[in-house]
Image 1 (cartoon, chains in turn green, red):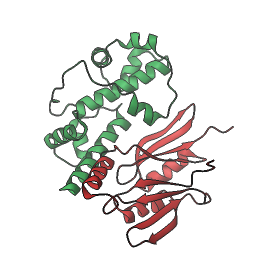
Image 2: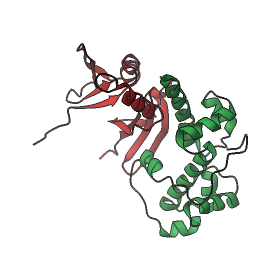
Image 3: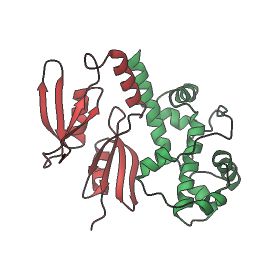
Image 4: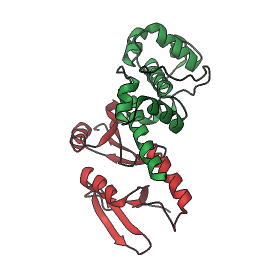
Length: 143
Length: 137
């Protein structure tokens, strides 16, 4: 039984790593499920059981974390940062950012300063905890 | 007082598979490979850096009860074992390309920050490894 869990964990981790690496691309559930070598429905369910949140939510928080990094450490325009991290509309980006962080991107930028730490650690430790919005299952085909 | 770090360990799920990866892919060399009867003492090191070894240790009984070993294995495979090892290199980009060609799974492509250029990768089990090229002085 245990070996099956390990194999499943490793596959889910591979898909999660893909989100961490290619968050800027238009990732969808079918392509992530393919990386994990499982069906789409199985992928969403198993990912959530493994990591405690849906792949959709994981990816949103990753994208918001990367946008926080860019807001802190660059002077790129908000619309550019929104595209840089994989959001396709400024409205969705701003709404998601506010839901997750509790303030707007521009307000966050005014308060921020650079964090000097290896990228993987920044990504692991500064991905915002999700508090403001209730978890909903992701619609099929759209993380 | 203390004067060096000589050995540290990484839990691996299979020592032969670990050798394939740490020696065959990353290019480390075997420092010691001994059957102690109760365990296989398997250490690797960076060629040319004899002072520091990594013990590739397999969790399991009798050193650890089976339930604990199962928990450790589950944590490693879901990427929750923390930061296992950091290596340095003179050329991060070249190392990245060479390792990628050998099928190594990267979590982060070469990224330049104030501390240098680095990459993140996983061993076959899920352990997190980093390779950094410090800025040249």
